[in-house]
Image (tube, rainbow, N blue to C red):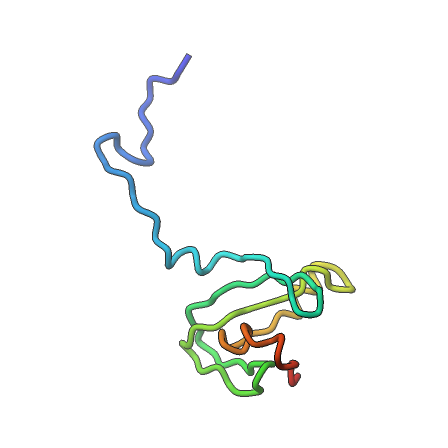
Amino acid sequence: MPSSRRSRRRPYSAGHVPLDPDRLRGMTRSEGGPDGGSYSVRQVRGSDKSYRCPGCDQLIAPGTAHVVAWRNDHLLGAQAGIEDRRHWHTSCWRARGRRRPTR
């Protein structure tokens, strides 16, 4: 028998909230690498600190949108892969098959 209580999450009169594509950018996706490895990749809008891109060895300025990537099949396990994650310029990440990491 269904409950007689109404849901408090969304009133019945309220319309459906459309999907925001910008929210999907922060979700982790899986990609195959040119070396045959499996990588988890997350698009980041920006951060408060700077990072050095392993693709071009240049700084990623604070507040710059970039990619964070780590290996799923790390030799020492999943936690070690997450701890070994790297911040890449988006264009460097796309070109990683043509250039090797400098670090």
